[in-house]
Each structure stands twice: as C-alpha cells, then as structure tokens.
Image (cartoon, rainbow over all chains, first blue to last red; front, side, top):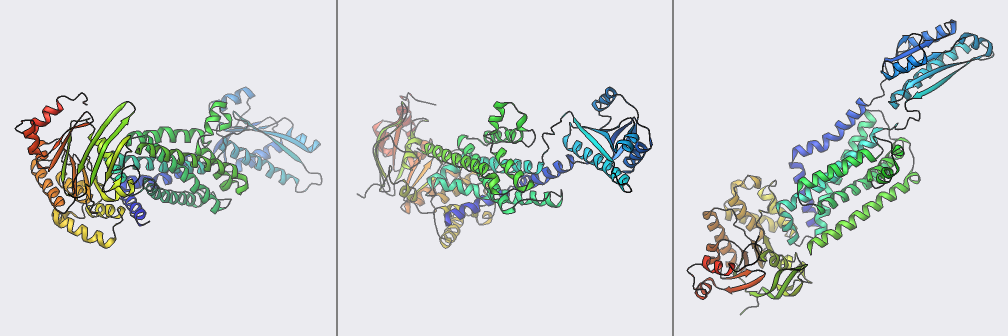
Length: 368
Length: 246
C-alpha cells in the first residue's frame, strides 16, 4: 500500500509540474461551459418580428400595441403574401411572424373566439421555442385584459407553427454534453498519454522489472486523473448552477456516482489505448480522433441520434458518452432517480468491465 | 566455489519460427562483472529480459539469485536492479524525488531512503543538484545517477543494458568506477556493451552470435584463443559469421 501511495504521489508530481497541461485541464471545462453557455444562449431580445395585420380593426391594433410594448420584439408591419413571408424567413430578415386574420375584432365580438397565427424559424430550435412562448404569452395577456369585464370570455387561439424543424429535435442542454466531452478528453487522453510516455522514455521497463505489480502501475496512473476529473465535475456543476442558472434537478449524489462511473469507463478506455500504442503522438491522435469526434457526433449532444441513419445509430451505442449524456440529462435536468437510468448505468458498467479485462489480458501478453 | 547467482541451462526463446535465443547455457558467479556481448539482433536483450522476469522462456532452465525464472519472477524482481540503454529516470522530477520514488516502489522504509539518498548524493557529488529536475542534468550525470538509483535497494545482481551509450570517454571511465565499487560491495554486474574497451574491464565475457553463445571466457583467455591483439579482433572474428543483422 505504501508503494502504491508512493506511486500516486509521483503521478501527482508529474501532473502538477506540467503547468501548461494543468491549465488546459482546469481551464478547458470553464471555457467550454462559458462559451457554450453564452454563445448558445436563448437571448431573444429585439428579435425581428413581422406582423401581418389583415384585420386593421380595433382589436388587432390593441394586440399590436401590446406586442410593441414588450421588449422582446423589433416590429415590422406590412402586408405580405405567404410566399413573400417565406422569402423573408429564408433570407433571415425575420425570426417570427404574427398573422392576424380578417375580421379579428368581429370574430371576437360575435363568436367570442378568434385565431392568430404565430410562425417561427425553427432552424434554431431554442430561439424558436422562446419566441413562440413569448409571443403566445403576449397574446394571452391581451386576452386576459379583454376578459376582465365580461361574463362570456373571449378566446384568442394562437396557432403556432415551427417552420423548418417542426419537431424541434435537438432541444438540448449543453451542460451534460460538455461534461461528457471534458471527462472523456481529460481521462482518455491524459491517461493514455501518461502511460505511453513511460513506455517511450523507458521508465516503464524499469517499473516492470521492479517488484511493483504492473496492474498497480496502471491503477496508480489512473488515480490522479480520477481526482482531477471529479474536480472538473464540481467546477462544471458550480458554473452551471451559479452562472448559467441551470440547477441540478435530481440527486447530486446520484449525479456524482454516475460521473465517477463514466470517469472510470474513460480511464479504462485510456488505459486500453495506451496498451495498444507505443508513441505519445499516436496515443494522442487516437484519443482525439477516435474518442473526441465520436463523443461530439454520437453522444446526442450536438446532433440528435434519432435523425441519424440506422447504421450510425447502431455505432452510437458503443460510444460511452452517449449513455452518460442520457444519464446526466435524466438526473440533472429531468430530476429522475436511479430507476430511470439503471439500464444506461448497467451498459456503462459493462463497457468498463470489458475494457478492463481486455486491457489486463493484452498487458499480460505483452509481458510474456 | 560459491553457488552461481545466475545459472542457465539451454535457455531458449522463440517468437514464432524465429529463435531469438537458442539454448544458451552459462553461469555467473557472485560479485563478478559479466560482460554480455553480441552484435545488434544477436539475442542479448531477449536473454536479459528472460533473466529479469520480463519474458517467459520457451524452453530451458534458468535461476536468478536462486529463483526460478518461470515461477518465481516476483522474488527475482526483488533481488535485481536494472538499467536500460534508454535513460530511465523521470526527467520532470527532481533528483531527490526520483530517489524517493524508486526507493519507495522497492518498499524501502522512509528512514532507509533518507540515509541512502544522502549517501548517494554525497558519492556522486550532487549536493547542489538534489532539488533540481533530472532533465536539467548533463547526460553523464544522469547515467551515473540512474545506475546509483538502480542499485539503491542493494540487489544481488544488476543488469545493465548498454549503460554507456552516447556518453563521453571520461564519463564512461567514471561510470565504470561506479560499477567496480558496486562489484566490490558484492553486487554482481551483468552488462551488455558495444564498446570493446569496456569488455576488457569485465571479469568474464560471453559473445553471442545468432542467438547462441559462441565464446565465454576471460578477456585474456579469449584473446589468446582467437590469437587476437584486442577484444575488437575477437568480436570481429566471431560476429563476421553472423547471418542475422539489423
């Protein structure tokens, strides 16, 4: 045990001495969270809104005044045919359109019910959802105002349409994605490189000749990165709660337990890569191309997996980050408990076990 | 005569059809400086790896420090030191940290490591450099340090795989002084080298050609036997017939 601690201390010395790497390790999650947080923000202030007022009556004027009063929209009024409107959307001149039909006031008065249409450019699904929500709430606000002194209430029914991406697939929260990405990067790449470095410099041979057991060499290498990664998880969660106002809905303990599991999976992957390769460059390249890219593509973080062709969907199943992403979303955003994610947990645990077994076997073969 | 610290009997290692080490048989006595010579690809490293417990032999027997190379690799590892041709300390750790680490993984007590590291630093004259990163030291010092760290746990045998590659003649001389000191303390030295002047420093040498030991004797006796003026000649006469080369 003392030997093991000596080894872990040495690993920490390596990590802490390499300040550039350290800066990247701790800086990366912060930068990523902030970039994703503020670049992908759902900021909808002053979005260009087109109002097509086909009614030109008292009620429509009141509604338009209400919309104008809100700070969300920059309004442009004109009468456009559906075709012209489509062109305006396509050119990106407008983000959302409010169409008030003929006889709006009349419908309200006589039928007690009228429709308005709200159309949003959903190629950016987050923004579109927000715009629709804001516009709908203004319409409802107006309706509540009208109904104040009436016995038979008016109803204005907003018909909403998301164009270009009607199902709004890909409405995600990037925090789970960044967590998966950062952990994958730190654990896989750092572990792989640090083990391969020992092979390259020849120190691995010295270690293998010593009575220190090879399996402990590998475990001792993993310990510092496990701890660093947990610190990264804490950083990301703190940022997401206090800077991005995205609270952890579910159990924090569960989230940490699952994160630890994913970290171990990634470490196992890093160890596996390091055993299969013999130069730091190759290890780095494999970690980056072989791990980072699939993590981005197949975790569901950037691109919805459901939209992919079947073969790609199948490939996504072997990407550990996909399962972790599902777990984090479930726990952190939906606030679900363990019974909702036991399957994903089991898959991750299985992957880890397989990776460890294969790694240890290959490692032994190399020794013989 | 004392029991040999290394005994091999027809030790063989095959990789597929390729016989890297072919039935080598030799003994090494305690406290001896044993030179293990051979051209590149002759099978020296493979033989050495088997003796260090890094590689399981395909056939034959061998005992190192009294332990069997098949079953008792753990005990062997406890009783040997090793230094490879690649410099093998951690460049991003200080001299002291390296000593503490290697002492630590061999299970030495903290007090033991402390006295030993002080003695080691004193012997090498590294007092001013103890807290410097190893990477900043000149190669000659690194090699000497590497050797000293390799015998920190007082092994019975130390294996040196081309320890003086790329080192200037003066430093090589100093390095050999360290080797003599260690041998004097009773540590058996098993060394491979390509420098024939170094071969002359050894008590006995073996020369491997194509996986087999072709000659084994004192440098003096070998020169007489091959009617050669220097070890260079002896080596050339033997290695000329080699079919394998890199």
